[in-house]
Image (cartoon, rainbow, N blue to C red):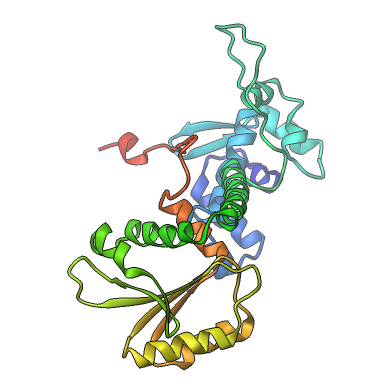
Length: 295
């Protein structure tokens, strides 16, 4: 925030994009750093940080808007620079009533004393904080899913594999997929499922509800079974994990083998809505610049 405010110390009007370019050079950011995205992948991380820094110091009354996308420093902002602070962060901005009003989201019309959760005073922008919190919740949910799967009956895991593949667009009909799974003991093959609804190709399956990591011998056994069936594609699913040797061995066979460990399995279940229900949904919106552009 302080380097951004200094950019406006000359009292002139500057665009936020211009300020962003100047700061990137000041921080000596590499092209790779400038291409780094926020967790959602929808915006460059550095641009997002600068935009939120501008929002914070503007809400504190240190910058004012002159026209769309352009800002200039205020007398309060000049005084702050004159005091030569070591840094400007959310804690520093607490001294300004307008920032506190923004931070606590107070409303004079309803005289409500309840305030929204304060902006976390971290190096992350609010969007990054939302993404981080979402990631933590997703990891906790994945752990719980795997725990529930481990306590269920073996037939439940077989049905789960069917349901997941169907939700991902494989298997043809539910009836076809249901018949395909459960052929345990067939030379290392637990099931065969259509890759598409037309049945143009088949995917051979191996499903292990294990606690210990799956090693290279199991992958070799699966690859041998695929070769025996002249299969080109195979999916090995486990509730545990794969050893380094197992991961390294998948590319040494003629058939294309995809390994899905417990973490990936739980992630796919969450992403495709299997075994989970939607509790809450949040939308993050931003200004539509095209709407406000002058013709």
